[in-house]
Length: 158
Image (tube, rainbow, N blue to C red; front, top):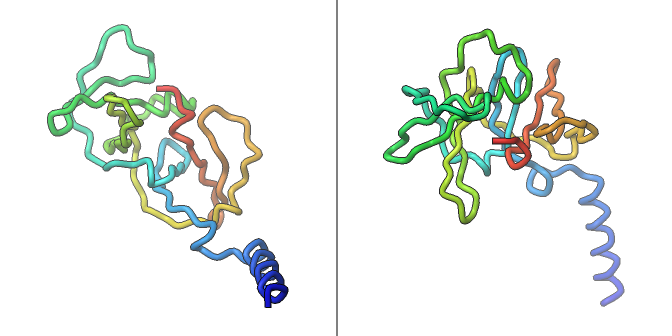
């Protein structure tokens, strides 16, 4: 009986490795547009999505920091990803902000400006091409006729 259990376990392991089941290897990502490109981020990092409100600029901050805003009584630093990723900065700033969960033991609240927030989509993590070399870019996801750049928010300088 133990031999059969070992065989079944081995067979199940091989089946899971070869079969892409959503429960085992899927990730939910939030897709958004920024300039000409579409990006995504693991939804587990996102706290909320809000409309852009009046930003207060802060002198002597890096170019990618657009300012801060009051979000339900908390100061939230707003970051322009176009500056970080070299997108066309001549266009008007996006009107949506993706606010991230705080890192453990941190009081900082950070939001990214986005032109348009599209959708939450479930993707198969094994289809992500991670053979990319770019700060903040964790991989590339092919969807139909376009590429979606997967951002690792822990690797983006803020």
